[in-house]
Amino acid sequence: MLNFDFQNPTRIHFGEAQIKALSKGIPLNARVLLVYGGGSIKGNGVYQQVIDALGEHTWFEFSGIEPNPTYNTLMKAQEIIKTQKIDYILAVGGGSVVDGAKFIAAAALFEGDDPWDILAKNHPITKALPIGAVLTLPATGSESNGNSVVTREGNKLPFSSPLVRPLFAVLDPSVTLSLSDRQIGNGVVDAFVHTIEQYLTYNVNGKVQDRFSEGLLQTLIEEGPKALAPDTKDDLEVRANIMWSATMALNGLIGAGVPQDWSTHMIGHELTGAFGIDHARTLSIVLPAVMKVRREQKREKLLQYATRVWHINEGDDNARIDQAIRLTEDFFKQMQVPIRLSDVDLGGDDIDLLIDRLKQHGMTELGEHGDITIDISREILTQAV
Ligand code: NZQ
Ligand code: ZN
Image (cartoon, rainbow, N blue to C red; front, side):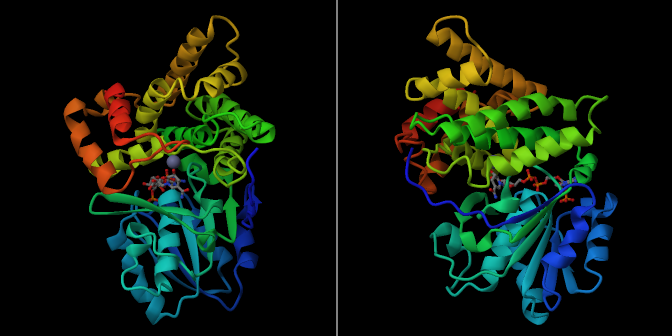
């Protein structure tokens, strides 16, 4: 196992009717900015529950954070932060709103010239406003990690800081009942690929991390399709297991002390930046191709994945790996996400643009060994056609 430091201070309030817990999570003298997205929280009762819980607080609101939040939208929040002397951000929504809140919180106290430098130049963050989150879409893990992804003019870039990790997160599975099938499929697949990026690398004898990861993968494989099936889709236990899996998949625990890959995500971000494809749908296209192109480097872990996650015990090593990749693709299809560029009307002609963007963003040494060069990314994208 590799050395690691691990601390996750986000307090989780899990379960039905837990939104009211936020009244105690935020200091009573705080000046709160409630931030949210396009309005889904007004249709499903979440907004009302939040403002009821904020009954004794002084609060303001900022809405319109779009999926794949943009720098331009997020910067608009700075005015109200200044005029109303906001000192606490409450994010209510999916990963885009929580990520957006993190950038807003960091930009508010940024000491450099342009807050975009946080993403474009890895400008260090020294301060950020405190953040709390009410999660409405289980997928990204953003509610209890320090990561955020922001887009500006087609450039979709990540940043990370412990200073923007939410202090608390409310996870009420019942608020996920209003999600569309598309968002359910996206969420399950995103959490699945987060787990894979921290698992499918090389063996360092991290037995706890491996078995946690295998448990999460198996849970998502079991419960994900139930959230799309007519007779089980409203089952709150299904939703609870998906929600907790998605948080656990990217709260730092399973990735501590093991190598990590993230090439599927970095290539996927270019697909979203250039063509607007939903985040998870880029991952379901890129991951099978990564598994195929990197099968030698990942051989030992692919075999472990085949045996422990998919229970494949027959055939020689190559046949078992082939079957594990096939079953992964079948699972993605069951979750109703694309598995090839052609499924989203893209093809070989679009690869040059993606390669240019990867170069421009410095994504030239990806993977657990830093050896996924631009040429190998091209091979992966070609495999994904
Ligand atoms: O904007 P509203 O009206 O809220 O609607 C949203 C949005 O249209 C809707 N939605 C959310 N909760 C709902 C709901 N609709 C009905 N009922 C509910 N309960 O769903 C749509 C998509 O929301 P979004 O927040 O964009 O989805 P997701 O949670 O998948 O977040 C994706 C973003 O997170 C980033 C992605 O790159 C992308 O920008 N990621 C963040 C990560 C992190 N912080 O660690 C890691 C991930 O790998 C990912 O990169
Ligand atoms: Zn993701």
